Length: 139
Figure 1 (spheres, rainbow, N blue to C red):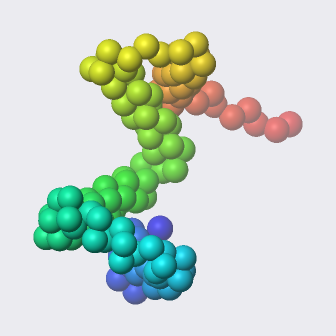
Figure 2 (cartoon, rainbow, N blue to C red):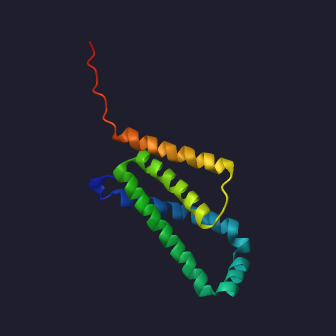
Figure 3 (tube, one colour):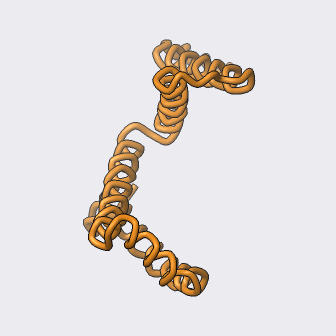
């Protein structure tokens, strides 16, 4: 959580973290990718057009940022445990729905993992709704 007196709410904290990460990551990417960057850019641009490649890169970055901005704000409002449980449930739902839509068979480990995640999410939901037992006074 951010410091309200410095106008650092969760959205601003996330934005600052992204800028810092960007400035530390870009030099490493340039160093590691520079030898093949021109060749890969030309290949992608010749196949899809330079404007389309640039637009897809920009939109991908923008939507990734927005998705994570919402996730960061959501976590700040509901707490890390709830956010983590819901994120796990989201992943399981995506796996199951994708298997159904694309008519893919799910292997045994995927089914077991999905069942464990769904059961855990359900158990967390029940536990969070249960009333807490009153604390006993120490004698």
